[in-house]
Image (tube, rainbow, N blue to C red; front, top):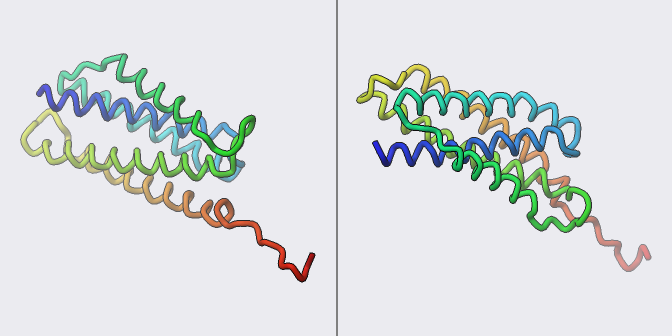
Length: 167
């Protein structure tokens, strides 16, 4: 049970960071389309985090505040990355942040699948509930990937270089 507890606490830290990142993106200057897409996703991520806390309680795994704070701190430190801008957000920031959310969703899918596999041996785990969480996470992965891919060309396509004849 000790290793499972460590595993769940680490996922709680990641889930906390994911919720914070999605909320930050939804309210930041990432644009109205992205904000509208991320607001309901951030709410779902918070629900998923709550589902993880509920699973931890059913398994008698205590929630450790330091892990929650570590997740929040990691998310905030992630905002300090160099992005080519000093004062305002770079156009690159939403793309990189969507990739981070996509990676967090990948980890969460692995978490739900792991717990689903354990549910066959532990009656405290509800297989149907875990199946629903896994399905929702897979849908979130698809939505995040679509949002990410829509930003690739506008953000990473270089400006055309004028030819010598047009100068």
